[in-house]
Every structure is written in structure tokens, then in C-alpha cells.
Length: 175
Length: 189
Image (cartoon, rainbow over all chains, first blue to last red; front, side, top):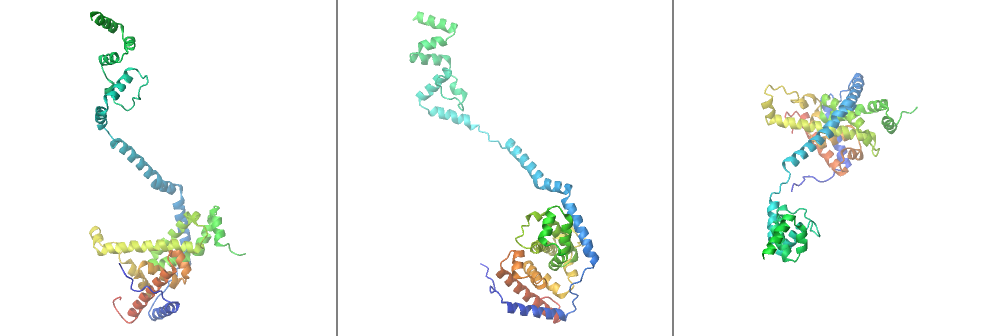
């Protein structure tokens, strides 16, 4: 810590005595002192100062000042934002992989319900937003097997086209 | 008829009367010039500071609320601008001493070279030029302009106790310098 050599506040008497001594000392030497300026200088100073005020407050000076203080920093900020958005936008390639891994961890029953909801065209379906399309891509055979296992033959038949229905009837007749 | 008060002139300027500001300048330009002249030490710099003080005062007259007198407000602007000049000059002197400027301006035509010592002709001005900036400002405002500590405190935004201590230190340094000079000393203390 830096310590001050003298922290006392001097009294008025000490101050006045020093001032008197300085005045005496200063008067002992050849000292030009305050050199008065000629009256013309003060008149000229007024004119020059007024001119400088005009320059500082002119429209051009104000627009330059506005540009320097507001417009240029604003444009730079916008450009930086656009640049950052373009080059540093977050990419998340790991999203699909992580979704797959999540699906792997789901119980079979949950995965089944998702499959059925997808195949049922939204009947009581879970919202599919944010879920990768690939987990809903199941073959029609898988859907058919599932429906038969769960006793939904009527619904299955209604969903068949003519060709599939004929194939289905043929299979039944062969049994 | 009594001349208009400072506040009346300020109000007139705010209402678009430019002549009122010229009247204010005429009223204070001598004091503003001399306070900055004593701090910066040279006529050229003081002339520039005086003009800049009034430009700044004109452009920020809207900020003047009348809590302090106009004269105190103008002095504050002038002292701050003068101290800026002193700081800038100290930086230039430092760079010159450290030989950086000579590398860029090998011809030695630097116009600001030794300007402080050239123009401070009087002994007391030479003593003031050696004071640190804060002590220099307090010395000028108190010794020459004989302002009260309350006024100086408003101008420099410093406590009165701190001002008194600064002034006393400045007085002692000036006294020592003058004693040394009048006794025929060649070197400053």
C-alpha cells in the first residue's frame, strides 16, 4: 500500500504566509508577468469562435457527426450480425443420430404405438413434429401383421386396395 | 438599464438568439483565455482552448441546468480542456524522450518541441509548468483567479480538503523553485 507523506490539511495562516512569500520572491526577479493581449485580439477571438461554432453546428458537420456516432456503428453491427448468422449458425448433425439412439432405448410397446399412429393417418396419433421420418417408415407387411395380431382385420381389409384384397383372399382360400 | 444576467442570456440563446451567446462570450472570454493560458502555458494552446470551450458550451447549453453559476460551468469546461492539452503534451514529451518520435520524424521538425519552456517566460510560470496537472489547476484557480475552495470544488469535482492539500503542496513547490531561481541556481530543484 502506498502511504502518503503528508495527510494533514494546512490551515489558512500557513497558506497565506506561503502566498505572501511567493509574491515577494516573484517580485524580486525580472518577471514580465501577465502580458495583456491587445483589444483587437479579443474582437478577433469572438469572430473566430463564432465561425467555429457555425462550423460545428452546420448541417454537414452534424451529418458527419451523426454518421460517425450512429450510422456507421449501426451498419457495422448489422453486417456483423448477418456475417455471424451466415457463418456461425449452429449446425446439429448429431440430432438425427441422437434421435435414433433415443428410439433404440424406448420400450417396444411405445415404438409400436408410434407405428400404429403413423399407419392410422393421425387417429389419436402422437405429434410427429421433431421426430425423424425414418422411424415411421415401416413396410405394409409389418403393418398388416401387426393388425392381424391385434384383431383389427376389418380395418386392415378396408385399407387394402383391390389387388391386395385379392391376394389376401387367395391366401385365405389356400389355407 | 442593467445588463441582462447570465441566466437571461442563456435563456435567450436557448430561444435561438445567437447574439446573446456572443454577449456571453464577450463577458467571459478574457477569464476563460487566461485560466487556460496559465494551465497550458502557451498562447496558441490557450487560444484554441478558449474557442473550444465556447463551442462546447454552445453545443451543450441544453445540459446547463443552472445548478451552478454559468461562470463555474464555463471554467469547468476550460479547465478540463486545458488539462487535456497538458496530458497530450506530456505524452508527446514522453515519446520524444523515449526516442520514438525521432524515429518517425528524423528531421527534428516537430513543431511542439520544447514549446512549454519557450513560452513560459516568467519565473512563476516556469514553476507552475512543473507542477502535476491537478496541483497546477488548483494553483491557477486559487492563486491567480482567487476563487474560493467551494468554487474550485465545483469546477474540479474534488473535496475541499483534497483541494487545500493540493494547493499547499503546489505553493511549497513553487516557493522552493522561486527560492532556488532567485538564489542564482541553474538547475531546478
